[in-house]
Length: 178
Image (cartoon, rainbow, N blue to C red; front, side, top):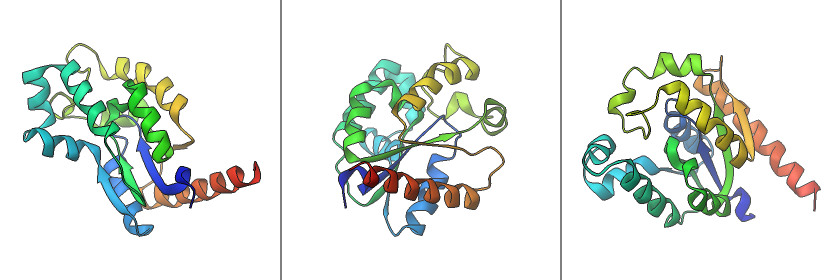
């Protein structure tokens, strides 16, 4: 299998469902599951929010980039933190590991899902609103994505079904270009 298809890497806003979808997608495809936020927490031995409060957002982003750039997995579904797109170096590394899939969720749905945004370790929430984060990050998600899936109105099972179909289409398109 070509490296670009080896791993499925989920990006998107906090609350987009990357971890939830990722776990079930990994089970469905018989792949390992990697959550980069959990890798970070295991490394720092505290919550992401505690680390950000103590060390600042810049230190967190540097650590996140380091953890991502040292990631070396195969046959996995990888759920990333929402801020990963703020690092071009991290995103370029992820591109070498597999296919980047953007879980695109509307701002309205994010408002409904994120009632704990100030305590869940989200970079940028100290000085910026969810709307501002959304407006800053959306173009980056779109820039790096190989596949985008609008998940509004889809339950988890439907999201996974559509995601697998889009991934299979993407593989065929890539193979036809050769």
